[in-house]
Length: 245
Ligand SMILES: [Zn+2]
Image (cartoon, helix red, strand yellow):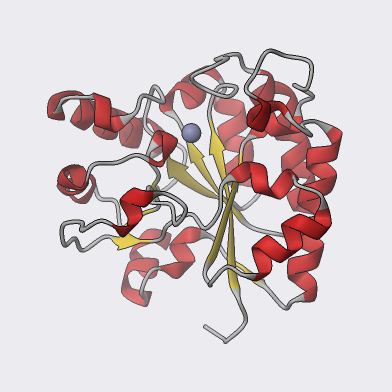
């Protein structure tokens, strides 16, 4: 890899703003707009998708894969793993992996709410995952000791709503972050939810303005010479070869 800043644009593909809404406008209305933007930008993304979305909207998942993006796993039901017993966690991982792998090879995982107890990492290893992006640099858990694992762990750099801040604020924020820069968005952010009862940080500047913000983030990063990669492109070469098989 070159010394250009590596950027992963990741998308958590799930119902609208869980645990507050659970509707599907993001999948039906937001996703086509997001996929078209990434096509226009010729930019590969990584789509951490729930089994629930894959069961409800298989054509959306096929579209993600057809457009050249990486399909990642985001559990089945968007339940927080730190609220489940081990058997339930194993079912979530095994069932989502099996369903998603009917669409494409899947080696990358991200837990809902970016909450994944370290003791569950062996379940990911056993299910053939190679990369985990369940940590977040802006959460305290990232700085606490975690068990050793052969998984490559790539934390999210910044929470999604930061990308919707006005450009002058957002640019300063993003410029201060270390590579690889792992950004994430949700399809529901590209639907106008401003007049719902959602928490302010969920609903502010959603819809058209969110799409324009994302386009502006991408343009700024391209000006900085960013190299946009899928998460699995961060794996060591032997792993990358396996993933492509
Ligand atoms: Zn999620």
